[in-house]
Length: 127
Image (tube, rainbow, N blue to C red; front, side, top):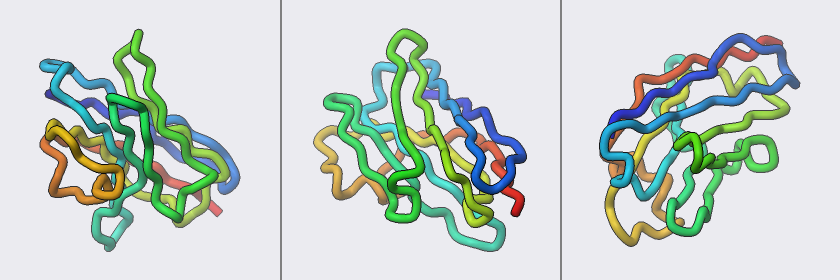
């Protein structure tokens, strides 16, 4: 599975962006699609993830109510809609895919469970 993330850019605080992640190759293999981010000087952190089978989702507390993960089957694309952006959302955002069966929602924040990673797209939120 290859992952191509796109949609990053510069936005003012309070604005919105939509990131896209388009899997290619063995697209039938991914069972979980997640978004992570790494802010300057910080460790990579979990943002959100969706389970393919039932579209069940999990969000980091810092983005709940502002970010939404979704999937367009026809376009084979996963989106991250980011609203009410804050300067602290500035980071490189990565999409990642997990292929393991039976992952529970409570474990989806663990980056060690993901097998494939995209190259990242930079989101900069100005104050």
